[in-house]
Image 1: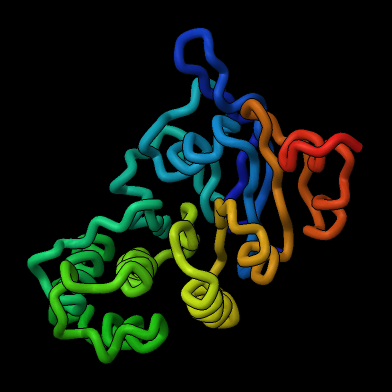
Image 2: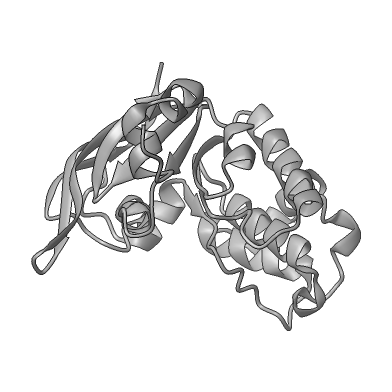
Length: 240
């Protein structure tokens, strides 16, 4: 099976603080991988290493069999890395559709006229078609999260990174967003998802990776990982 992403012995330090410590894992094409860990475990830094916003001190990052370890962030977007952020920050003065056109033209390096069909399909897939002509600044939190997801999809990603996208939603809103993510994954989208809302995460992902102090302490089947003594003690704060 083809791996979309492979990290091999990746480490990163900020001064004396090692935030990513000899991390190695692969994500096969079409798989959804969840990442959990306590605050400060290095989850966001790991995403920044994958996107190229931070370059590692050592190790190798491979995207679709191409070494991207030192590749700039914008080039990685055009090579197929799409990312959503914890706090949606759309262009509030543009419509939902215009936000997608901007992301697609920039991320795919194409004319807006050429990406319009893709953007319409993404609006349909993310439940935003009825909001296409609405200003992004007037959206509810759920629809802003949907737009954040849609903008990441508009760049044409081979790999979709979701950064705590379910945070701040009500239970009903969370279920609606999870259904959207499941729909995208069912179409073959490869996903890495950082999330604290575990029931949302575990309803989508096939594998779960646990970070603690920058190190991988477990990766595998979500049920097996969540039953692990180390995970329950470190992540859930339970004495076993």
